Length: 148
Image (cartoon, rainbow, N blue to C red; front, side):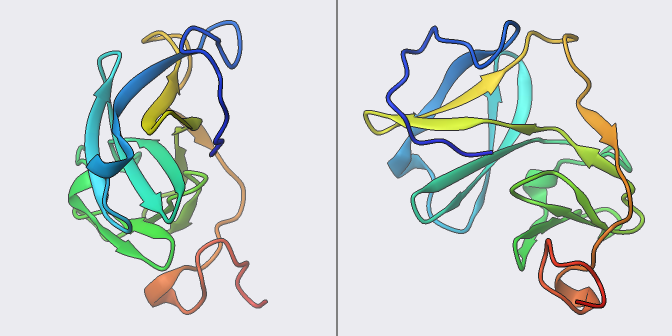
């Protein structure tokens, strides 16, 4: 999720979420994974041009930080078992990852990157998903269904 809007810091996306500043746009070079903490949650931020994306910084398959992984065709490759997660949506793109990682909305206001985070325990950080698409080293671009 990504938004670039001029929204006050205390304006929630929904009843539970609040915006948390995690750094200046200059703090996040294009194309890299950056670990941050927002309201106590470990989050990995990915910048693609002027767009920012944020995921919970733990693989849903095992106890490892996605921020220590590699970017492969729009996905982050888990450093533990090489499963792929879509950087924009958190959806799994290859096994052994079969459960999505929580994606957070982002916004840039006055050069400051903000992430909308629910209070700890307010929402699941992973969610079950349907069929997975191929990605990167598995033959197709991330987010493109296999056979397309």
